[in-house]
Image (cartoon, rainbow, N blue to C red; front, side, top):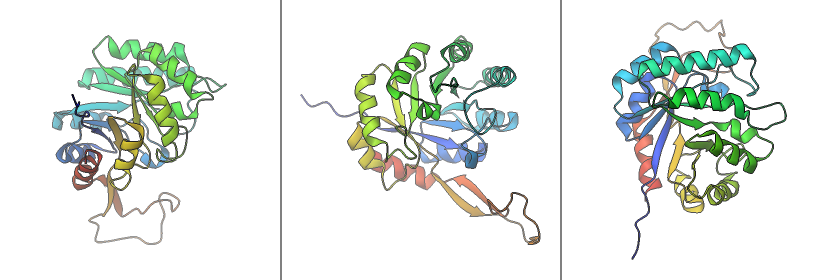
Length: 253
């Protein structure tokens, strides 16, 4: 008897409520809402969370990351993360996305357990984000994260992109053996998703599926750079419903 493979679902990393709505329109199963994607993502504003929740009927997970940089946090930053999770609980979110490490590159099990308990006692799911990829031993980290009680790990296999880390992702799938979901992310597009899914056997993938659109300003001051020239002040990155549809189509092709 042939078992039909499970359909591959897409989580879209959305940089705004606008992008979250576009993700839903394209057929995404879940949104990971964040801000500052150029810095790897940080916790979105209260307004973004509330408006995304208002407009989404699909699952809404929120990134809990107080700043760019490493994942070694001070006591105050840890309190900020707890406060942000409480905001997500009050807003009716479906889950949160966390990750705290120790200085030696291991998972901070004590602090992560506290965050997971806080979320789960109110019925929220928890994803462990790509802090996982910065761990000294990915397979030990996998066991620690399962023990903590997270439901999935977002990973690029310890490499810059999921395609580069595909072999490691396949090994993580084997080691996880259904105890936790392994969700590849980083650099996943409609052009490589089918190969990645076939090679690794994953059933969830993560992509921002974004495009850059020209803003509507008619007047442009060309004598000033607000961001040090890293981005174009007159364009906006937003999730494309068409790219979401195409990624899903090819992932399940």
